[in-house]
Length: 233
Image 1 (cartoon, rainbow, N blue to C red):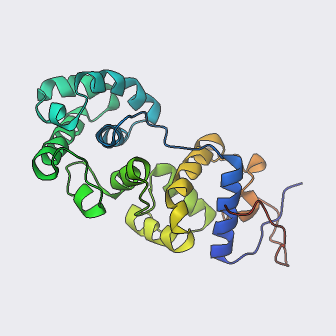
Image 2 (spheres, rainbow, N blue to C red):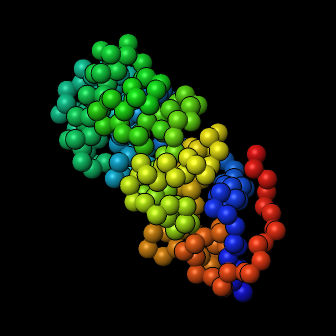
């Protein structure tokens, strides 16, 4: 029998979703391979319109050849293009990587900056990239990363009606505690890959289904459910 949808205030529902995601994916972390902040920046730029798995196949050779910002800044652009070709849009990505690394060298002493304003001044680094780098390289939760999975699931769950990632991010920042901004995104990405597929979401085996506005369930319960999940850490 399908679970009944819970009638909860939006923020309470978001916190319950967060609690369940923590239980379902306790070890979820950034799936890009990197050793330094600049390598994470480069890997995140490469991940646009490309899977993390493909990026992780490309970056070992790239980072072996050009291990830091100065090396990438001084690289032959055609060689950079060849190394990142299989990630798609390789000419633009190579140009942005080199442009970002040149600015890191000239304006930031060779070190990746640690503020949203400075990071988003780098070629190829919009808020999504900046959020990933700040959170995973420096432990700074400056915003909520919104990729295709987060955009899709956030809309399905009923936490936003927007399609613009910046507006989605603002909606989520009002619902999720700041310390959880990035792990919310990472766990939602895991859930999108494992259960909430874009073409055919598996609502019948989704542990968030009773909290999801788009799930195919029985009619809503008349009473607010008092059922509680794992407390939020």
